[in-house]
Length: 357
Image (cartoon, rainbow, N blue to C red; front, top):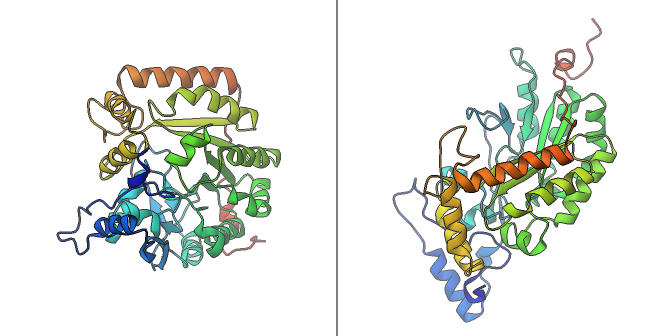
């Protein structure tokens, strides 16, 4: 690794240009390089938490291949710093870069619980699973301070409404009490992301996330409490973690996961530039090989935006990964299924309490 030019503790190593802005007002990366040379630590590399006030919180998911119809995100931007994260591109809509800005300018939606409650009380709303973290992790470090996700879970329980969670943070166990209450009425399903069994790989790909061991322990604890867990072994990056798929699936099953899913990495929008810059600094000896393998999965490019194909990939490299996944399901997840959440309870709790008549 070229340590001289590697920003420790961050995934992205630069701020790429925001495609929605016609002008650039500062040369942040020149300033950061100056600080490195001079041995100074600029204050503006610290994480900022910025309150925003959206009018709604529940989003209709129009992509047909995502596996969810509705999502909500208490936070925009994510301090975890996963270099491959597709959500980075969304930060450009707020006027920021998908690079370092995404990791250190976190937008906080303090009104999320109230907005959610307003949504669930609508007369024309028919209960359907709403997924926390359709974009950024609802249990990222900011949640420890703001507790917006916990407040939202309390709203879901109050109105007996089904909710899904996607996270890679063990902080979810803080809310085991409310998760157990939701699960008693079959209203909760959890997806835990595990991308590698190697801590060296995890530190590079996802610099501010909890260890792989803690993630597996989190799956175990949730499962021990009867809460259904799907392991998200994603993304599979050929040349970095794809060779681990079988062992990842085995470990997830051994810790109680009832199913697993995976995607093949695609580097859409600004992510292609960020990932290319990152891997040439973080893994210079294998950078070109990995980039070529990713391209082999997407018709010679780093990204394929076609629904139904974009996350599956094509070609021999992708076929090998899919073959491993098929074998993993046969060996470790035979006769296991992720349960369907209940939607029939919500109509009796529209006003926040059980209707007696």
